[in-house]
Length: 404
Image 1: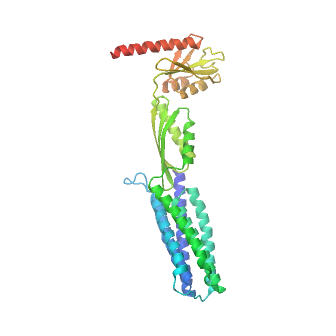
Image 2 (image 1 turned 30 degrees about the vertical axis):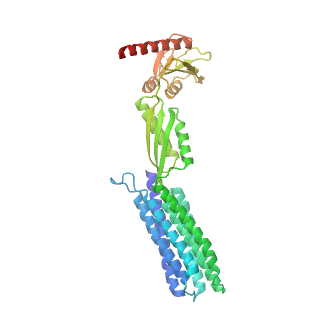
Image 3 (image 1 turned 90 degrees about the vertical axis):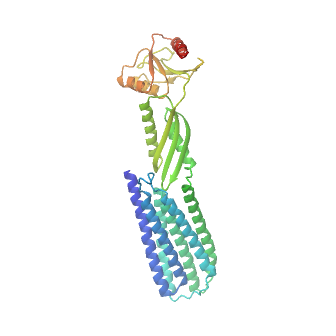
């Protein structure tokens, strides 16, 4: 929350800086357009004024985006994207103005003080170049579409300044038509930038999914947890700078508290590793187990041991038809805590050992995970397995009799 508040303040500062820059340039260009009589400079003043309006929209949207109310419990993040679309429209207008000024203006360009006009435009060009690059860098760091759009808009102002300077220099040397051809290229570039901003903003308003790379990264984080059997679906959407996730998981059959702890841990890791996650909703279901999963604590020759002396965990799955599937042994150190920790994470129903674990924490964690400890005096795991299967058959038979 502290980091989010800090980012919010930075966004507001950049948006305010953009507003002050465009206000300064608008006034400066307008004053010197009157002094020099340059129509190009007057057109630039109008262009900067449109930038000023766009900056005001950007600042207001950044401030509104962080607000959460009862009426808008998910926040007003998408105001940033609405602002980005409006700024894109201003970019279209700027492109149109450049083409119109270059080819369709009937006014003759008579400039009294060309050197002054060039100096003013050079100052505007340097200022817009520096600020647009810095704001673009900040927008990427803060993941703000409104600042990104505003930086692109200021960059368009820089390009149009280059055009005007080219025209003024051409006028100074007697080539009055020089800027017309460059105007078309830059206007098309501005239109392309506006279209890109417009489409990105529109996609977010229509709840476009997260990037494929981010979804894959989230899957990797989830699958690192042994409790996760499968991911049924991941849905993500973007609103302004923030992301929302809806995840449905299949988990091994643990106790309710343990399952809740695992889900909280998954949520925390996703938020730590994926930037600008606002909220994550995780729905989880236990895996349907129609058979038994049994873990045998054994030594190297597969003789049954206790928690403190076992060297491996042999997992055997028994289907509802009593078919047996034996897995590869999992090597462990002869340590109660380590062995117990692994047992709670591999989704077993029964763990077979010589004795219950002596450590209270291990016994408690096994109970929370819903794992039964089956003590046996048998040495051979196959004999112990048959003992469990016989007991399970008797239980199932008794259950059928009670049902009838």
